[in-house]
Image (cartoon, rainbow, N blue to C red; front, side, top):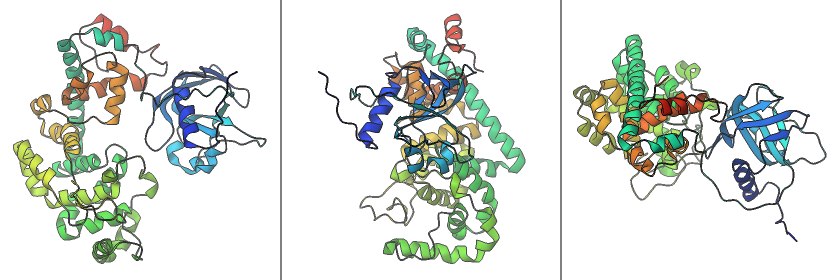
Length: 438
């Protein structure tokens, strides 16, 4: 006789097991919604390990209609949608399906903050097999074809895609430069780099509302303005903060106070900031502090970018310090016994590949750049396209290959809602040595 392990409603292990079994396809693809809808999972999506819905970039067909791309949320209990605050969280606005196991006797609806009703699916009780946490994504239909290419062929393919991406970034930067000046274009790009990957939009808003020319007029007050407009400046009652933080924040308030009325309408909405699902050192409040230091070093940085002196630029960026943020993760955290880099090697590589090198038009430097770590999106792209290549890790250590991989993933995987069935990429791969980039 089979013995089932008791399922504890709302327990983290139960929720993770549900997600793992769902991603493994254990429940199948076809379901009946709680209102009688015919639900088919066309694409299971990407397993989201950060804040937000459980699976993103999924595709779901309702009653035979064209697949709708969006996110899928999986909860042990239908009431978890409200318990966890999803109905008031804009990150869940794109959810197209709410999956759960327990419902109880009451009829409970799943609605977004904009009051859009979400289709619900209740899973049938099945044996708990205790599956382990799986991969972020599934290998695509193109993976075997890309695995058959030689190392030289795959490098050429990814290089062509990376060049397209590089030129597109350079064009966007030049257009911003035409509208606001080259300094502002680079400043906005670097600010967005501070927010990568979850807070690019609020950092861009911050840079637009506090342009470099304004901050340059008062370098000593730049940090206070950035914290005031970002909304991260702690409330005037500082008694809850450690002594060191109180001293630092009090100085910021003294500089911000004369400007608060004039800039109140420009404050970045708190709703656009994403605070969860990231390393403590990458908290956006700390990144605002790093941006203020970058502004103080602007003349030297701009001169080195113009000279394409990347070695000296890297030394300055990685060597930047801050009296408070070099030893704290947040305003309320205790001091770290060891210094914490404002801009580490991983962040430097992201800034070079996405902002500095396209701005300077230095494709040659990008082609020789090596990366020490891979962001989550590039790992997902590698799983989709390079899962069957034993040299995938080596390719990802090359910035050009990583950028090309991201471009192909965005051009094909992110635009496909058929779970690879109708994606043209595999056929293009089989028909040509190089792959056209759309």
